[in-house]
Structures are given as structure tokens and as C-alpha cells.
Image 1 (cartoon, one colour):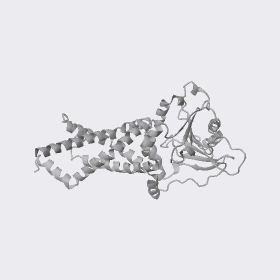
Image 2 (image 1 turned 60 degrees about the vertical axis):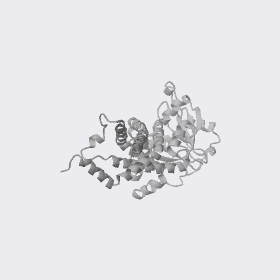
Image 3 (image 1 turned 90 degrees about the vertical axis):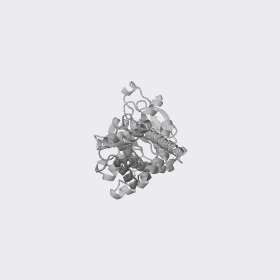
Image 4 (image 1 turned 60 degrees about the horizontal axis):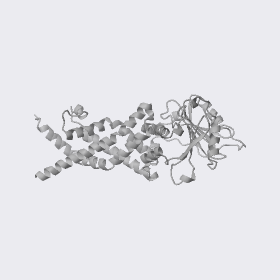
Length: 392
């Protein structure tokens, strides 16, 4: 019969045979090093959950009064002409984001600005009042605080190199988290104590419990954030692998309007054509033709799509005769596209609405709690080891 005193010894021997010290050191030193990036990503990620709303709060000029919102909105064509008048040198396509609600601005992006051609993503953004057609602000992405935080979170302010680095760190952090689960895994019958705080515990034990409780209760969300984050950071590596399992959507090449008439249809006519095709959908983005042979690109949100702000339902329209050139119907696409379409709304929490966004915001503080408690626990063990050496 096994005595109570022999059980911990046997368990300790079993842990050593299973490489427990090696996994513990990997968890410790990877956590203390790249864990700082985890903390940074968590805190910046929390700020970005509501980054558009925070930017509006920080910039009163971007806010529309309730009284003004009762007016009839201007046609999209009038808004576009106002943008072109304020930025006459910006030829080519503009991408207009429809207002998120009645008191939100139209945000128009221009991706070909020469001032930022050395940066892979830094569009000029124009904010247009949908009721007056006034361009109230123009700023480059990355030049104002919320998008600076976005770039810090997404690429450590290092452009493409930073994206790759963040993707690799994300994979390593996923490894750290999984090692943590292995180290935490309780003995049979000890699950409850492994998920709670020990009553009347010492400071050392309380810090240990705080570390494990934060880690285990935040495990699912952290796992999903790390997986989705790595996939979003490294599409050139993950997408080809996914494409082998399930062919990914590729838009038809060389979209072109046919007959070059003298005048194009208006943005509002293009929107009407798209909404006639999808009468239950909401228009979210309107991209104007890039040149005289370009097409309108209308993105719409259908019920059931994971992201309302960045839907995948798309209609390409000839800018002269209004004929639909092509369409993308996400509901009929395969597993690969469906999987990728979920990644961004999963990462931002949008997939679960406001509760999901709040959950992601709160989860952004978990890496900080894990890092601080992990650091304190390491220092406690280090001091104990030094004291033991001095006694010997």
C-alpha cells in the first residue's frame, strides 16, 4: 500500500522522468524574455478593441451631434466629389467606409499616397460629414495616436519585418502557454485545488496561485488570440498551407470596364446595383474605379458573416454601363476561406458583438498579470536558492 508520505515523492520522480525540469526552464526563460512582447501586445490590443471609438473621443471634430444626425445624408457621389476637391492631386481609387451608425463620419482611404510609398500600409484617411459633405479631417495612418498603437501592436513599428517577427513570437508564445498547461496539469482528484486559491496561504503560494488561476481561466481566449494573431501576421506562410487543404478564393484577374463611354455612373447608382443584387445586405465599403478601365468594388455585409465592418460579400460593377462584372459570395466558399474570414473578427472580439469585444479587452491584461506573477515567482525561488547556498 502507498503511504501518504510516499505519494509526493513518487509524483516528483515521475515529473523528472517526463522532462519536467526542462519544460519548466523553457516556460520560465521564454516567458521572461518574449513575455514582455506578450505584455505589450496584450495592452495595445486592449486599447485597439475600441480604437475607432477612442479616436473619435480624442478628436471632437469627428463627432456628429444628435441634432445634425436627424438630417438627410448627402449622396455618396457628393461626398466623393468633396473629397476629390479637397485632395485634387490624389488620382486613382478611393475606398469609402459607410458610417457605422447615424452619428459617425464616412471614412475614405487613399492607398497610393507618394508621401508614404515606402511603407507597406499607411493610407491617407479623410473624414467626411455625411450630412454636410464637409471634409473635416485628413490624416495619414500611423501619424495619429490610435493608428500608431495599431502599428505597434501589429508590427512593432518595424513595418514588414515587424509583422514577421510578431508572427514568430506569437507562435513561440503559444508554445509557452501550452507548456504552462502541461506544468499545471493536476494529479487525479486535484482539479478543484488546481483552479482555486489555497486558503490562508503564504505570500509565495498566493503568487503561484495567482499565476496559475490567471493562466487557466484566460487559457481559451489567449489560445484563440495567439492562433488568430499568428495567422493574421503571417498570411504568406499560412495561406499556402491552408490552400492545399481547401482552395482559397482568388478574384478574377484584370477586372475591366468594357466600353469606355464619356461618363461613369455615380457611386449611388453603383450602390443601388449592388443592393438590388443583395437586398437584405448592408453596404459597408465603396471603392471607386482606379482608372478609366477600373470597376466599382462594393462590399456588403450579410447576416451570418463573422465581421460586420470587414465583410467579404463583394460586387464588382462596370463603371460605365453598370453591369455586374463579378461577385464574391462567402456563403458558398469552402472551409479555407471560411476559416480565414473568422480570424480578424475572432481576434478583435467582433465575432461575439459587444460582449466579445469587452472579453478581448479584459483578456489583454492577462499577459501582464502572468508576467508580473511569473517574475515574482522566479525571484522568490532565486532568493530561496541563494539562502540555501549560504546556509550550506
